[in-house]
Length: 515
Image 1 (tube, rainbow, N blue to C red):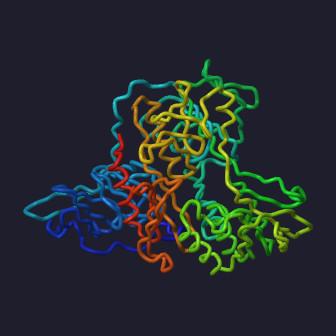
Image 2: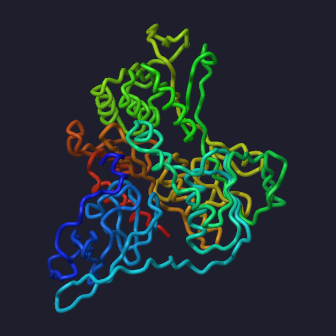
Image 3: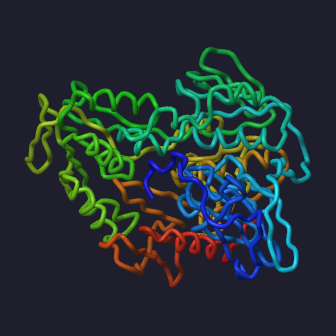
């Protein structure tokens, strides 16, 4: 799977015409079959005695759902684990937000027939205990957007005010370090929704606005311009900010970070006239930036203190693979090393090595933006402490995304992760809970990372392990690693083993099923 596949496929539907009928037995017990209903591509899915007809492509990046997994009455995308309701097509869990089309299915004398397309039903919200008048969302990233979208999807009729320091409306941030930065995706693919979406849905989007403080006692948000906004429910989704290292000579150099659309535009503009770039740090963002700028033809140097890139997260086998992927494309690694100074267009390293570079991109990690929560007196623990419903120590204030540390039922510890899919799913759960649905956040963490034409999927959470089990052949780009602790699989990292990644997620959910 490559990120350019987020463009809708142009191929015409093929396979049997389900309007003419097919034998039920041809689907097997839990089978899926691609075909068509007239000029529309259709995926038939059998679940016990029932058969469902849905769009065959995920509404996120158009992943092939026929290669996905049925779990209960949900259908899951093999690429990025989006989840859809078999009966209604509703996007149950991000990263997809739009529903699948559905068709009417009839069974007669052992045959299955697909009839007309069904209208898209609205989700049936659970009975709520309360209906707030106004929800304020602090942050315009993944969690904030997902919360606002879900509130309106659940027919919340009160006010929604989203305050964001960014100049642009919420964007598909994973694309910023991948295809958009590489030049293979147009900018119109980057916004999560067009500008008119917010007006149509009655979401007041205040861009370029900073929040000065939060007053939990009076339920007030004080903006940087001195004005204040009252709230009935508040979602803190302030995200994280890139770590900037203080290095000699850096103030006289062009040093970029990548977090926003404006950041990405600035890097693209500088890359257009540059020949060489330093990527300081071998984080996922750093290495994706390295791949994207190498795709643009720049000479890329990656400097990092570790012996293998990503070894702490994925283990040594994946670390060696990732390094080899980049070196095959011409990336220069300077590992077990650090930048000591920037000097008149040259980068000087701790071991005495020096090389020319026109600019630098920092990939040295991020830190959660918890200043608002800290000043408001909320409980903190290397992030904002929340309960299983994502509510903070202050009633009516929720936190989601990169700042939230929640009690994870799968690892049996409180964790904070900086993954796009986690942030969006937490935003959705927070929205439901602000409407009184008392939903426990128990999603299994998932992320993906793109390096040229190779995508790495990671499901679960393992901050430590005592055993690595390798299956398949990673060098042949067909395998996975199970990260285990005390005999239990805590996480699975995989290459082109999409179905097995979904299956691993389902197993983790069974150990601690969502409630």
